[in-house]
Image (cartoon, rainbow, N blue to C red; front, side):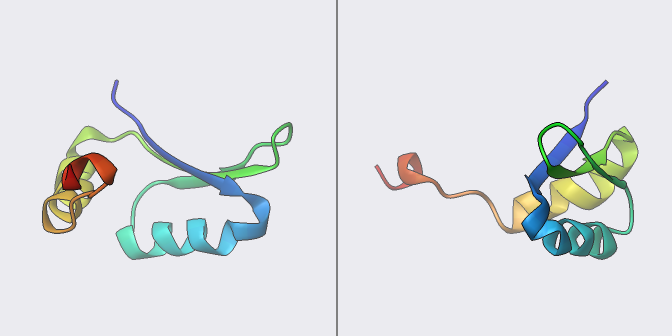
Length: 67
């Protein structure tokens, strides 16, 4: 099973909840041990419909992209 997870410290929880609201799918939970707030999406079809088009429109451009 493929799962997309995005985690941030609880001080940035608003950003995680906003991501969920924008995408309209997935779940958000807080991990007690690490203090992280995590967005999780496991439904393969929803990932194809919502995440893949975003990554195609706005690709990651790290340092290696410019080398």
